[in-house]
Amino acid sequence: MFKKIDRKAIRRKKHLRVRKKIFGTAECPRLAVYRSTKHIYAQIIDDTKGVTLVAASSLDPALRGEFGGNKETAKKVGLLTAEKAKAKGIKNVVFDRGGLIYHGRIAALAEGAREGGLEF
Image 1 (tube, helix red, strand yellow):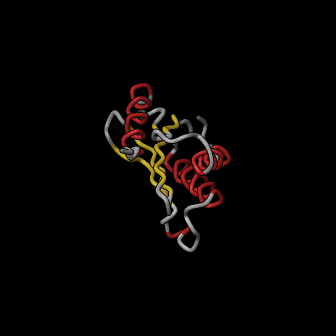
Image 2: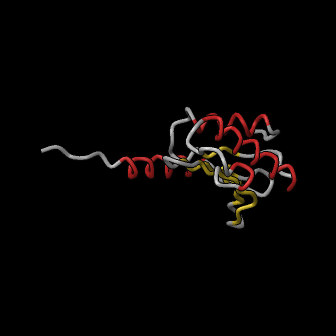
């Protein structure tokens, strides 16, 4: 009998492992990324207060007409996140890949955020 691999459970375990080490403060908040099959989401979070400071996704009105499941849109989401963070005075962040592999859309979002002026 074959057992189906629970990929969500594996990702959750990896994310918990990463979150043991990564913690966002007011000076250096956490840039958390979530990737679904159709869209990509990014949040800048201050874990000391438990507050989301900045949020951007492929569903934002600025990116609404584009398909959210590709690298170009992910890069634009990273640029949009960096732009919103600059407006709030955030320069340094800690990158939280959410248990996902740093490859493809996740790497494109990080690259876009760096181009926008965020420092990891």
